[in-house]
Image (cartoon, rainbow, N blue to C red; front, side, top):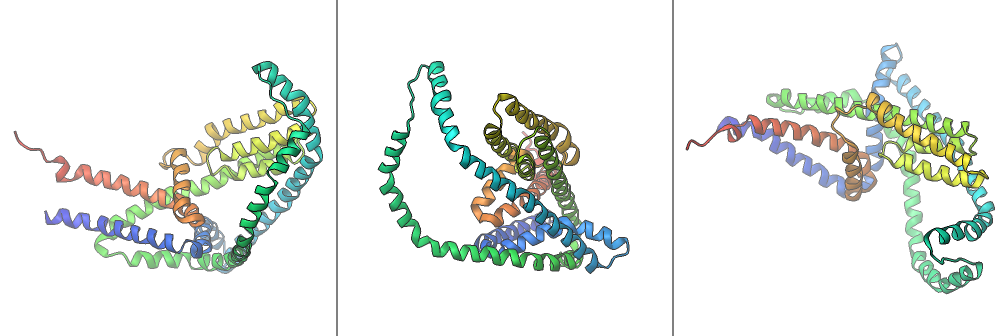
Length: 358
């Protein structure tokens, strides 16, 4: 009985520590956002820094090279994506009257004939609706006005966090291996073996998932961007990059990209052929991602299904805001690993295996 209590003690202390950490994260989520972002990036980039260091570079030179490469990659993506999306918004504004005319004289008559309805839209009714809601709009603006000061403070905080992020990332990367060793030395020696096994299992799962998912994002950005550019869609490269980078949230990347690309195709092409080609790019991309790229690079053995990922992002985001979104996958992986070990411990316990004699 004493041995069983001793085996349960690490789990009880671990659960208490996890709840304490979650409580602190909830209270300090706004402050911890740049620190958590830097820690997650350091975890992903540390193996690359170690490889460069093994090739003869110093730790400082290796991490500076990795950080500069990441900075110029992000800057290049912004310089490509932002101007294209701005031009797409300008094209939408310029062709809005054409779309309104198409809806009024082509789409609605066809819909009325098909469904037997009598829906109609005219410019006069639009103007009357806008005039009728003008008072409500003014009231909404009056309610929003006091929040502008808070919005300015939020913008200032965001700029400060973005400025702080490279500094934090440098220090995390520079001392990452030392921090891991220090954390390991804090574990009581009698629990070191068991906790070490769990930590290695969590590291294997997280490393496989995060680095594999990053590879999937880059490949899908190239596939979607290249495919949309190949079919002649203006701003197709930018839309494809956005869709690929959102792939880490299951189905959101494909849905967002398909929506943006469909709108761009309707604005650009005069026939249905261009629209069908755009849809074909996303259909092929989704098939490749679901049945080839993601299973090969990420795999199913990590234990984080798409449903788990979506629930974790939504739940932790609701509880802890942006910091929760950053911690959703690591905490989910830890929970899956701990759950497996707890179930295994339960099946091996005397409580489960002992039978009551009739």
